[in-house]
Image (cartoon, rainbow, N blue to C red; front, side):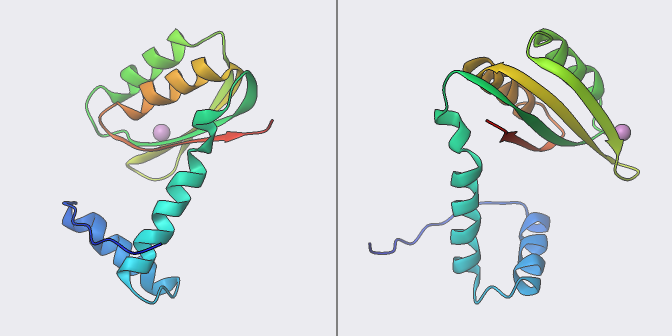
Length: 132
Ligand code: NI
């Protein structure tokens, strides 16, 4: 398949970090690294098409300095109490937190939970890993 040229606007600090990781991982050029990152994004989001009962974990990282984020994330999780078995909070450093949320239930509802978390200001990443 032929290649297409794209253009995108992204924050300078993200690009700087991206280029640093590209160098460390030995990517031949930025286009190749972006292609790899896009492939990972596609693979990481395959769960979107899953259906039925799913068991897994949601890995959520966020910046806890953002005003109101803790309350917002707790509120979302309380709304999905029937599919959340447990959660574990890890203070990664002074600013970043990792939350591991064990989920079990209908994929459609888990998907809504993930989207609810993704939409909050200060959230850095949300990843769902399904066990079955
Ligand atoms: Ni924390």
